[in-house]
Amino acid sequence: MKKLTSGSPWKLILSFTIPLLVGNFFQQMYSFTDTLVVGQILGKDALAAVGSTGSLMFLMMGFSMGLTSGFAIITAQRFGAKDYVGVKCSFATSVCLSGIATIILTVINLFFLRPILLLMQTPDAIIDMAEAFFRFIVIGFFATMICNLLSNILRSIGDSQTPLFFLIISTIINVVLELFFILILKMGVVGAGVATLLAQAIAGLLCLFYIYRKIPILQIHFSDLKKIKKEDLIQHIHSGVPMAFQASIIAIGSVILQSVLNSLGTDVVAAQASSSRIDQFAILPMMSFGITMATFTAQNWGAKKYKRIIKGVKQGLLLSIAFSIMAGIIEICFGENLVKLFVKAKEVRVIALAQTYFNINGSMYWILSILFILRYTLQGLGKTAIPTIAGIVELLMRSGSAIILTLFFGFIGAAWAAPLAWSGAVIILMPSYLISHKKLKRM
Image (cartoon, rainbow, N blue to C red; front, side, top):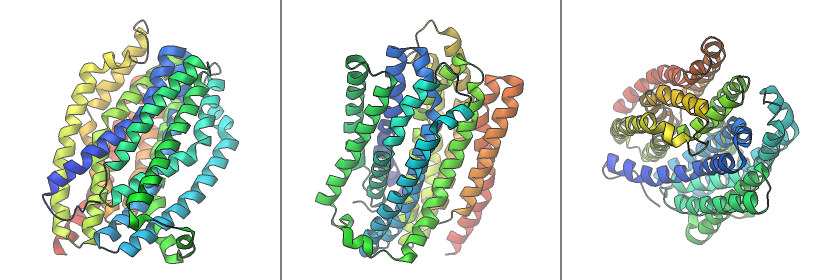
């Protein structure tokens, strides 16, 4: 356990972010290895099939991360205030609500998977493979939720290293199982889905075992679940659901974008599949700094160290923007070589389309870095309304840009959808943060 309420803010933010960044890197390795192994072994159509479900996977993962991150903010606030009984109660409440959400989402997705893929205009040549792969992702959603909940709760009490260690183990297992299922058992894209399910389940079980051996304040029993009060449920729902909604809004925009791209053919889908995987790695530093700011802000808010929050946000912004510029340069300069990890060198059109995506998105990452810091800081302060509105604006701009710009400019128009959406969200978040900034100075 680690308190973020004393010491140099930038050093604490950086030291907390680095394990989180590496952990997020390995989290992304699930989809990366899916794409890499499938693309190189099974070919372009299989790559497009897995890629066509990427936005749906992002929707489920985003909802899970958002919901459990919102729950963890309450835990972090109570930990910062040294309310350790409240920490255990918060964890018990989070477990209860996460279980209910998992059951509902799994049932809905299993029943409507095929209609959703049809609605997204998934090409006929790949729709059966896409459905077979994603069905196992849906079945394994319980493992995703367990893994995200326990990892976020551990981070809320200042432990960002243990979830990293378990993610590394599960990622290695994922790679080994994918190769085994695809190369040895000849299971095709289904093998990638099964491997991801099993690997995430192992990561969740390892986190659970660690908590019950090492973290007394998080050791809950069935009797603790029966003690949950209505007020605790309402507080956690108020924190978790808006963050899940925000993540879902962003993901829905990606689903709409994917639907538009699916109508442009297999080459475009393959280009999007490979470039988006690399893009997800590139934005990890910005996202990790944002998540760190949520924990940093929540703990210091609980400890009533308001001046420290202001100082931390300034230093967090500088660090995040610096990393975003480096990520953009790397992506633009080495994009073509990175895409060749997923497709063969002869796929010239796919590689060229992906490089166009990198040039546009990579040059705009600094806007995304500001977005993450502001959004997560406001959430750490317990303010959920404005980030939710910003998420809605982001959805509208991403969707509108994807539909309208793609109509006139094709893939280039689709590539501009994300940067325009980031800009719209920042315009909404900035005034709210400035108001909160003034309030913190007065307090």
